[in-house]
Length: 393
Image (cartoon, rainbow, N blue to C red; front, side):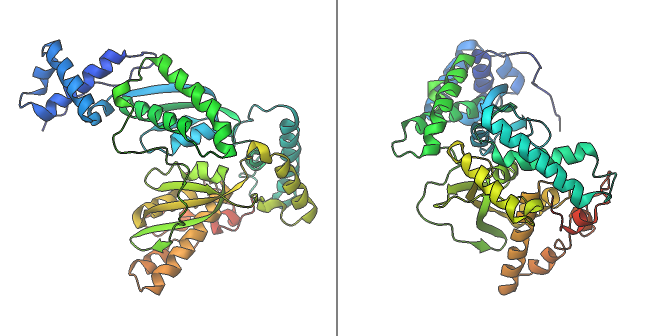
């Protein structure tokens, strides 16, 4: 066996479209030629050009997936980031609303600041003196921001580094064109349209958009929103399908598990995620819901959606290894535990052999998992409620 590096990403370098086409054309040569790869590197340009034309016209687009493009998107709405992040062929690094203050204005800024202060006080009152090495001032500020961001719009601009293949970038462009031509649209679709149009223009300016690569030939479109009128049928076995109510913020976390499929539908009634830390104060709960409703036209991140999740038993375990932890976002932490308990109960009903195995994950956070899966934490929180999964923040 021999392994050779034939290409790699170079920071601050933009390959030309011709270079990406050439890479795809030569890659296709591996499929159709018996000659060594070195011969393809030195073949006549017209030979490669013919192969490029043939593969694009025939729909053999996978060869254009070898080249990856790294994009920095600035001022992109969180909603558009969610569309991109729900497609599985990508890598992304996104400014976090958990750890940074988002760029807000006017009334939205006032609401955000107000609730950051409220959450900060609630956390101090509840956990003052508990695990002091864990609940530092910096940690409390982060947790306060994490909860206050449920009020801000899912169209709040953010910054992200997004990397995907030359082929996928063109498919995304094609998906957006389908969205712009959609006839039956919702208020959410209406708000997305100007951002879609602007993003398409930006992609065109990169020089990478190719008319022959925009159509995947399989009728696919963006996977984020389930527009089918049929309801998902819940099932648990070696594979599973389930649905539950969760916020935009939770979905944005969940969709990063690219081995699991996620979609959402809007609920017929408006409901909002209520942070558990304020649930003991009915006055604060009412105030929170009132402020969420003020933001309704902007689609606040705390708006509850009908989230549909489909995956495998093995990949659900991988999700638990990430989300059952005191460091994880609380909403997805609790939802993952709820899905786990539903999974166990369903497997027991059919006497499935994996039911007993799954029960080993129900004792608390990932640091309590059985040996094979136990997380070796290098920064132990010492936070009892976090370890048992009973925390309120």
